[in-house]
Image (tube, rainbow, N blue to C red):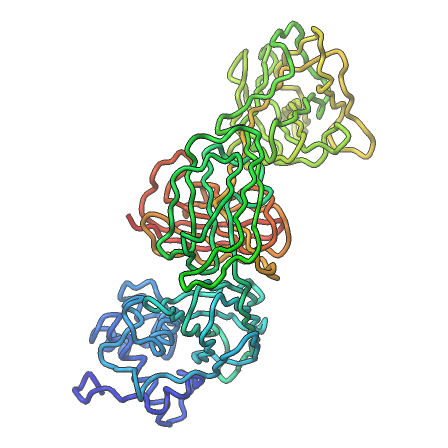
Length: 600
């Protein structure tokens, strides 16, 4: 209609029935209105008249035709992504969050505002709803401050849960509640909002089927919601800044902080007024515990009390950024060690000076390579009794270039230890196939390992051990050496603590990796995540080939909602190029990933 000059059909009926499916045609006014709006949305944001003509000419019908047309015209989006932007534009019709949420041909205000499916004015609140494919609801939480929202979608659906935020000051914003594979998720929204609107949609559902969802919302207690370094952190870098984030913008004149030993320098306040950052005036001292106390009485900008009781936390620094070589021998290798049976070898138990620590490399003193250069390197955690226990990485086959110290880089193995660990060499066996006669083949094993250096000058550390058969077996086959120290060394470094957060609100119930924001980004982006129980967490930035660019988090984290900042740089501090990157969160047996877009 609008292409032929008749103008657009206003959504007189559709505005009150967003639950009506776009793909279920009933020849009712609501069907004509929403189809017209969707085609106009494609026209305005995805190619004008060309996409309408291409869509009509496409042999595929319905949602497949939309996806086919978009891809043929060079767009990455398919129907589902366009539909999700469309339902948000129907409610917003505002270009300030992004141009995709705005109409030129429609004026969706006043009489044509889209109606809320449900409205809540007091909290806590909870409810239930349902959606079908290509339909949605608008669940509104009005007049809120520091709201925590939880969502639980029916497992058989493939849900997305968006939120439209209307802050008391500033333009509206669009965000997404991160959901796990069971369609469960939660998110916290700090500050004052005129309303927050939950917008659920579902993908890949047969026509005519609806799936249900549950939701709840509660206002959180006011006060400190996050700090860095996180409470109880160890191995904190010596140049660590302090960060304290409040639930609402704070009045700087009411904020009083006891820094204790921390060398507080310049203070910075974030643009939104919620976060205090304190720069150190000098480097912190190694292996030192710092306690920070925020005095009660901090107020918001309206003069209301934000913090009624003192808030304090402690953290401990590590050794600094320098790596540490662990060595228990004296460097005199008068003895040459050589094993003769398959699977045998020797190792050393190491004690890092700080935990958690990352194993960067192992070093072996190779005394002779006459009979071979190849051997296995194996790394184990300690079993608590001074013996090798669980293996921390797969055996690594290496080849010594010659006599002397042989350095094996282990950084790509991501080995992080919380206590004693063991590094060993194990002899390598070559299996040769020989022809013994017509139709007969035999195999022959031969050793292909170098001699290794050892010293027997006191004092002997008692950390070296021998393995007499392939490890592990049910019986103890590792024997400590009281008269030798083997020429095996390890290089470790403290694990840098992430720019993370420790929430004071109740712990989430799910393991969640949220979409980074902003996305795309140019300088910094925040990667939020949540863990339901204290556990070891790694958060990595990868390129599209799966190569690690930077590790942002590596260590034990308390339960709660956290966040890590990425500045678009690699481990060496170099800026990486524009493009798509992968954020990967791992904890226990769980792995979640998100795509991020960096634009220089």
